[in-house]
Image 1 (cartoon, rainbow, N blue to C red):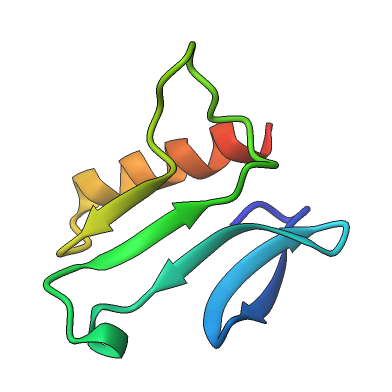
Image 2: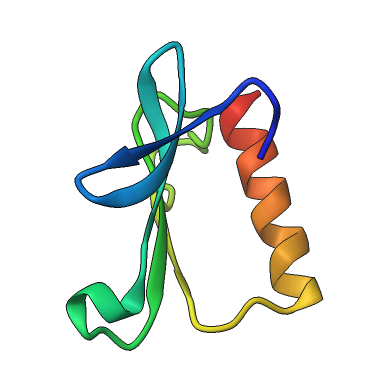
Amino acid sequence: MPPELDPKTWYSFPAYARDGKVMIFFQPAAKFEARYATLGFQDNTNLDDGTFWATSYAVTEITPEVEEKLIALVKKAVS
């Protein structure tokens, strides 16, 4: 995570905040017996793209390609 983000727990989930406000959170699949984990972004991030954009992403496996995409999303979100 970028150094300007602080790790914290948010509704029992791992999360990252800036200035005390959660920006990014992770929901493990096992918590809800779900098929996939979820990486979610709050509305204080910079992911806006016109009038329609994703605010969460399903993650089934962390591969080098997925890791690159996640890093890019996080960098954009906190820019």
